[in-house]
Amino acid sequence: MQKAQSFFHLHLISDATGETLLAAGRAAAAQYKNARAIEHIYPLIRTEKQLAKVFAEIDEEPGIVLYTVVDQELAGRIEELCTTMGLPSVSVLEPVLAVFQSYLGTPAGRRVGAQHVLDAEYFRRIDALNFTMEHDDGQLPHDIEEADIILVGISRTSKTPTSIYLANRGVKTANVPIVLDTRLPEQLDRAVGPLVVGLVASADRISQIRRNRVLGGPGATSDFDSYTDRGTIARELAYARQLCSRHNWPIIDVTRRSIEETAAAILALRGNTR
Image (cartoon, rainbow, N blue to C red; front, side, top):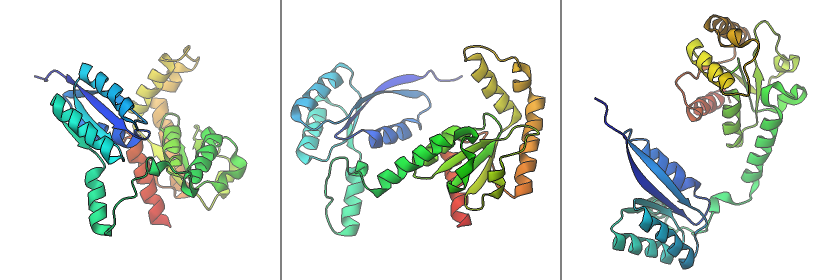
């Protein structure tokens, strides 16, 4: 008998954007399949006045408090308020900073939002994202050679979301659709610099995604049956595998992989080919 799902409040207090907290909180909450976190995110909290408003809301819906606050006085105030209210709290970065300080022999600079500084790495990611958006779904093939990675695959193999995820890591990524019995762009055949990776999935999985996509859209297409037919999809997949085999492109099955896992596998392939 399956246990009923319970809910709890997860309060995330950050003096920056809160991305670090959100990732940490979700990673921890994912380990509890029968408990779902109701997230409350409080970004850019840098003053006592702002903190007072936050805790007024927390008092209404008590729960776990996670925070990343560089100012130690403000962090101490969070601990004090949580203790008074009887709430569990964790400073997510402090244990990590303590290890860094111990190993490096110097205290952290404690700069708010230091990971978001507008440096060369930041602009490299923006450049990669612009390139990736411009080269989505086979667009602008004339300069595809400038990509770091090119993803190929039939419709609904997560090419676009994986490309965007990689772009956010600073990797210029283009993606090109494989259509049954249709030649790929000549520029792709000539590309020698980028790593080309084929994405596939099970016919059942692709059929399900396509069906949900079409039914959730403004209207069904005229070729709906063909688009979602498992037999047709199996032929598309066979054709995609044949193309990848002919060009010696590695293939990743994304059926049971998250976007993050697929991206990690692609980056591992890229590292091995350098």
